[in-house]
Length: 281
Ligand code: GUN
Image 1 (cartoon, rainbow, N blue to C red):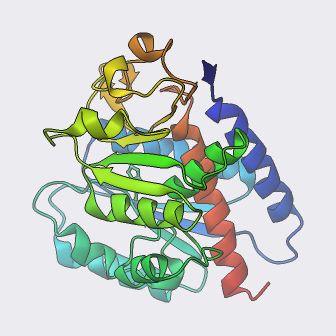
Image 2: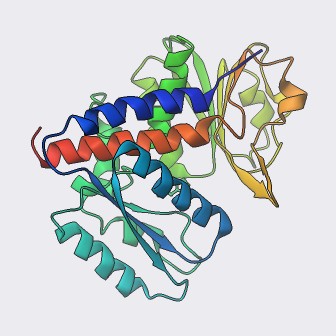
Image 3: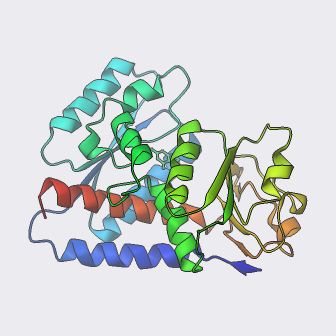
């Protein structure tokens, strides 16, 4: 088994972004983040994004809103940021507290400032082309980077994506299929889940169920990318039971220290990309 060191790869990406930002002749890229409510994990992620952004030279503008803010107020904030010439990239930290219409809120972000690539127009573009030079969701870029780091050729590879979010699953499948993979999307509550996961050369799991994936879900020597992060007290768990699967997998991303730090690095890469487009660089 080989452990994929997400922290190390993230540092490399951030170094590249830092150098590119340092070389800019104009003002630094500006990233706005809207955080609604008091979820401890969301607060932690936003604090991490703020701290790490400083290191690469991205200016952040954090809008911390009470959970009882109205949808209208959030939309007004987004519209203000859409029109603010300083702001290159906008992120609404998810999940929003219950009661908010996430799709409606995301759809208010200017697609040109949509750093997560969650806006329906951007999703439509992603699903309709294999030309993925444009901004794609940081998490999907992370998966490609991980597979690249172990020189995994995707042609004819069987990939199983366990995702409880429809958009993530579909976007992930499209990007991998464009690179020659045969992708099956499934959900954690499917009865024949194990049958599907056991055939996969590459298993990608994003369900948020700690230690749910055991060795009998995994094909011998498969590549396992664990996107699930669940915080229990001070401890963080992935979807995969690392101890149980370690003698079965070929490669695995650990939690913590796998996908998480890389996603932040890719968020900065996307922020710089949006900045360059707005400044026609
Ligand atoms: N919450 C957890 N991951 C993400 C992400 O990639 N983007 C946003 N907006 N919220 C998240």
